[in-house]
Length: 260
Ligand code: GLP
Image 1 (spheres, rainbow, N blue to C red):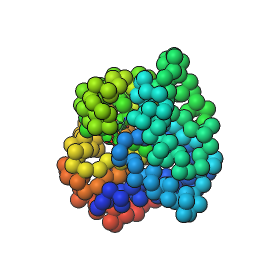
Image 2: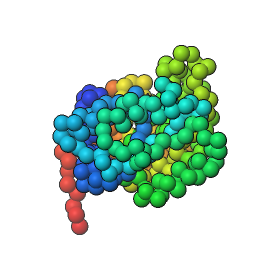
Image 3: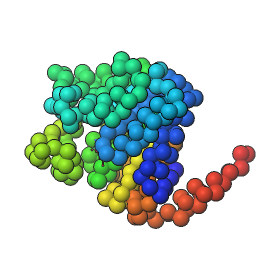
Image 4: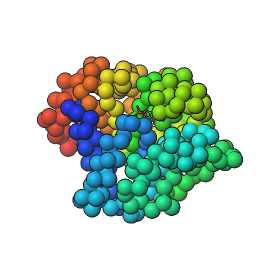
């Protein structure tokens, strides 16, 4: 796992955007796995700027979002459909037929989840999956004790997640209790994983994910099982990592390993 520590949130988002842009530039029909939450907002802003000012072209790109609240209509302001449209899709040129977000209003969740998994496969798999992290160490909505082999399915949200996300709703009781989410197993099949986190409130979860044991109690720790995972964090978020000096030394020196 690679850990990139940036001085500021903006610098962190620029670093992550560079990775996505590089993938889209070398593979114009790339499949992007996208995340919601406040953390990737700066990434989407930077990608939209690159599109506007530098011609970064998303015309052939396909996207799959990680998750959606069960019961929220796509027009609901707190739905992830709404979030993605407002914060990213309406600022770039991804054809709407190429955009996939789990449905929070389907009449048959089991069939939808199966279709979603199949659709990812039919599109050739995800080239890069963007991830945030919950304060309880979850990725997507894979709450503690989610199987590390799990696939797209319905999950019951943990109280900590409901409390964390209550800030976006009028009151905590408005936060949906269920979500439809890609599984940890689904996420691990992406060719590259990019996890972003900033601020002190995520420092414990990130330390557990990066340096703790691989455990379903912190589903982000499953990144340790992936051969190409990069964690982008800011200084505050790095405050509980034991190996900070090592990560920074690598970042500064980029030592070239012997090829043979
Ligand atoms: C939700 C999302 C996650 C996201 C997390 C953190 O639970 N399902 O994908 O990583 O929130 O959100 P934030 O970036 O706002 O802290």
